[in-house]
Amino acid sequence: MLRGRRGILSLAVALGVALALPAGASANHAWGNYHWARTANPFTLLLGDNVSSQWDANLATASADWSASDVLDTVVTAGRANPKNCRPTRGRVEVCNSKYGKNGWLGVAQIWASGSHISQGTVKVNDTYFNSATYNTPAWRQMVMCQEIGHTFGLNHQDENFDNPDLDTCMDYTSDPSTNQHPNAHDYDQLDTIYAHLDSTTTVGTSAGTAAPSNGKGWGRQVSSSRDGRTSVYVLRTGAQQKVITFVIWAN
Image (cartoon, rainbow, N blue to C red; front, side, top):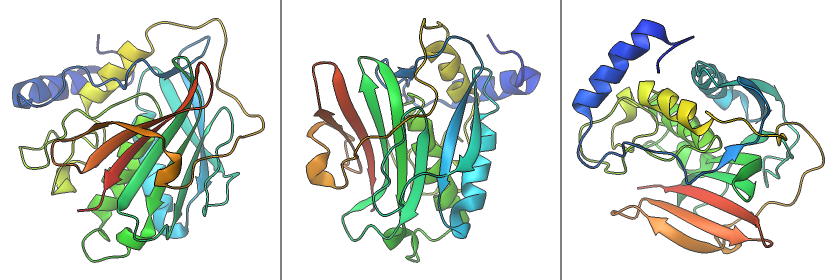
């Protein structure tokens, strides 16, 4: 049901998305059943600001966009990570940028999960590529920032075909992100579905962090890839119910 902050405007957008949705797009784009445990909605998730001034506006815009959801709010706060390694902090998401090198990836989102409950997350955007002529544009910066943060809530992509018509959401892969820089109504509806139930405990909060994998060797086993190989998902099991899941968008 469309309600609250989105209202009638979201209904109009949702109808437009439904009509435009290509056959390759996912009607359900939850990332497995991963979600933050919490005892009430809406809940507030902190986004640690470990980004340079060149990225501050993108982070602020993404935070405001996702906070239009009925079930969650995000608040940008002082970061607790060194951007070079972007180690996580339990109970929140650390967002970082740095020159991570010519390793092939443009952006990485990671979540740490116990069973289906997310306990911490990180987002990294690679300035080695964003300083190049191809990616050093407001549209590319905003799409990747918005998308990687969206993954840390439990969202997957709506569509992974770079060459079909755009869905006007940052959760859609595209070769031209000019209209794919923000969430759309389908993203908000998916968050409503993911967070429809409440939990008896919460994983949202702050405490000591744990070490983060820092390169491809630390991502574990690749479990999926888009048809063109430009996105990949990895799982690293760290215990019986403990794992780190990594979403990677590769530079073209």
